Amino acid sequence: MAERSTRNKIRWQARKMYDSTEHMLQRAKYLQELAGDRSEYINDTLPILVGAIVEMQKAFKTFEEGL
Image (cartoon, rainbow, N blue to C red; front, top):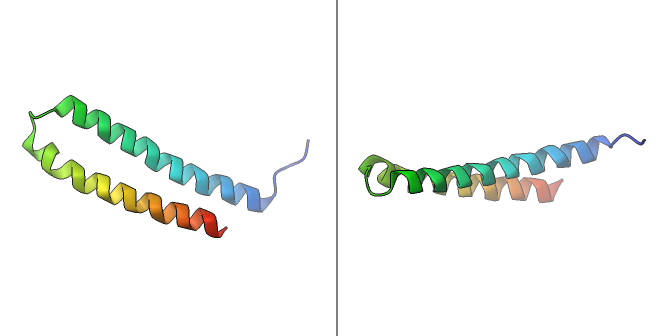
């Protein structure tokens, strides 16, 4: 069995970083569903956090494409 090259290992890790942000967005959506309209703090703060996660996704995608 051939071992993956260092380049492929790096690409794999970059992909996993992106996938982690996808997981974070899924968790944020679930958190929003759980909170509903009962938490003003969550409703005010979550969009800011989601925006930051989306920006991280863009950066990770650009990073991955550059490899």
